Image 1 (tube, rainbow, N blue to C red):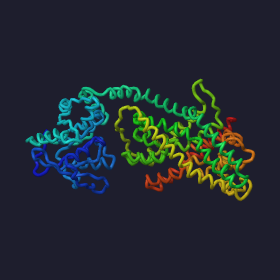
Image 2 (tube, rainbow, N blue to C red):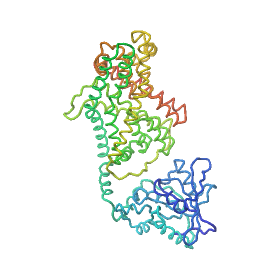
Image 3 (tube, rainbow, N blue to C red):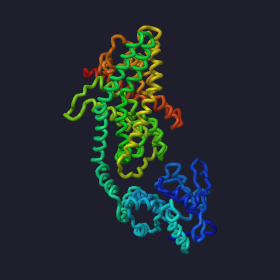
Image 4 (cartoon, rainbow, N blue to C red):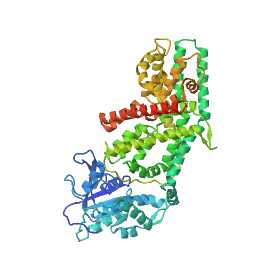
Length: 614
């Protein structure tokens, strides 16, 4: 390979995918003596350092942001490509590139190499982290890879001086060339062809690889199959929702029994006054009716964490890529949406990884439609109260099927809304999906337990703070100044907005519960517990589910479920949407369309159920 003749220090650009070891190589070559520079007009930082080869040649080295190819849709990618192509006066045009790839990710990172090659610029491929690859049993024929690519390929270990010696030696050899390189015109290659070529090339140059890598590819042939893989993903999700009900029955009964025993003990030892009512009918009824769902929350997160730790979550994104493309997104958007099943807030924040601003905005706007864990207490309460645990087909639980249907409705609604948005307000170019698939691995038990404990702690903290406070406030509003619910402060507020919800089958108690439920969705369960405990404290000795059975009709309960599929009953989610979009207009649009969907779906459900005689 040849480079243009030039006097003075030449410039080398460090190019490669994120986590390929570029920064480690930069630090190793420059000794950590680097100048940090901001690219003009943006906050993206690049580092520039000086190093010298054994032959005495000096080079300026630019550490660019990680990129996967020539798709310059993110700010980082645009900065990197503008520097590589010499389209900025802030940095010297690079004389050649070090294209750094992780040897263990050869099949994926070769796509970056092939795309950089299409620029027609001088380059050396740095096959990095070879020590780790060799340790794991991976053998790569670097000479054959060089022959196939037609550019120098050097095996390196950027963390050690000896591991960088061959790279410096090869650089001196390249610089000693006397022929000037004739650069070809830059042309963005077809991405699908690049992916196919990279996989083919990797298969030819990999002499031996760990059994786990082979197992990963064998499993991927099944799990990433467009038909079989999609069917398996749906089956896994269906199994999760079945497990949420069937596995949680015993621990929920134990918690329910403990709460009931505590309430009975306090009622027996305390005089019948406002203190007893506050503790038993307010705090314990409100907080206890939410804490009882902790086993179901833990089971749901157990499966989410297992999918993440085993490497299956990334496969789910690839499986969904084709479907997401049809609505104008790509599979990478599926990862923030999957995160939203736990909570819409981290899902919205995870949308930052999307390269397209239009994709990111669309993902934020539909993230609340994913059924977050805060909806789970509402769903399970009403399903347990109104849907019998009937066996279907001798294998499935009807309650689990209904739960799966609620999640599915949320997903399908998000897909439909995304399609409409991408055709109208967030119209833009659809991007192909490029991401690394990790090898399958066994989850670390300690890491799994720690993750479950952290999620449980967050849930309990909300029960011990937000729901605790709301339960007290709601108890005061319900208990004073009158003796009945309708003459209380809560009843006064509820009666004002009750006419709005009456057409969709909501009663006064439901309307009262919706108001504090804006703080967080699961607060509605505690509010219902407080409302029904106080409104009929002497006669109501049943659990909340049984109380609702006697107070609500089935169409009313189904309407409430339909409302919670869509309603943005979470102030924190709305606040984060405002921060992430940096727009009051987009946030208002999200809130309005979600409440509109909630109202319409609840009304259709209520009147549809009544017309069927349910």
